Image 1 (cartoon, rainbow, N blue to C red):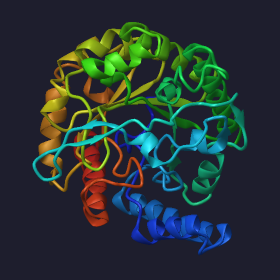
Image 2: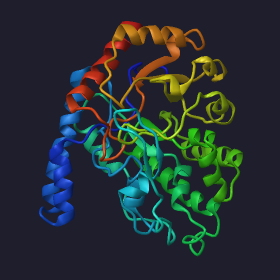
Image 3: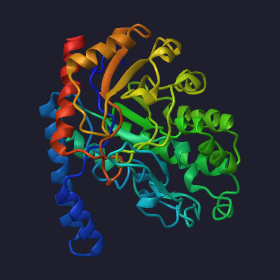
Image 4: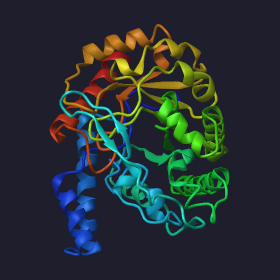
Length: 370
């Protein structure tokens, strides 16, 4: 755990234009699945090269094969019913003066319609391809099971799953089976993405989750139990746990520090590395780090993925020094605050600007930790 690099990445990277065009062509029947895969593989090769060139020792495939960071679950598992990109984009999104706010309604047809049955593995292809393209540490990202409460609806799902608990139990079972397969294939660094926990700080989101049958407190407590269940019993594997407050098209969903999440989430989840968003004042102070268990690594998401705002290693080193007043310096790391392309929409910056930020992450780690 402590031997992993101090510089880290969260997961997604911007899709190149040729990949976005190829996805449209595939959907329209203008190219074959084989032709699309060649373009997709070439795009993954490009992001692997970019991360290595930036000086990173931890790499992902940029989640380029996914519609959204969480879409590999409903894409690989039958029973989720019909869905499209809107299933992952709904909500009251807040933006700065450049991008503005955006409200997207929850699709009325969204909802599990049948018993979940895995058609194929979720991320095994991603890992095996990435592993074959780099000698550095490949990282695989998976969604936290309770993130999929969004797909359960009393109106459309009750015949298949009378309760949210029953549905999420099957989701967790499939994710655990995926981890078993990834470990069999040689994966040693796996991340669970859990952007939904900070949302309960927002009264509107808390009301949505309560409409699914759980109080906000139960929602967090039972969700973390599921997270721990899927991670339990894998010696030799490091688990990371990523929290953020929403990230789509350079917008966000919630604000607030980690104070209310330390007890129910950060102290209870059994992941060795905590990936925490800290790129601006919306994330609060470093003070809550004092209450994080001292056997964890905290990776500070100091580099924003939401804009081209330039960061410098020297400026980031100052922020790390500030955090080290609350948590041991040698147990800190640095990363982008979230993904650059949480879905195919992507954030408002160029690939060149993204890659410059990746270099800053690596340079900062060298400056601070050597």
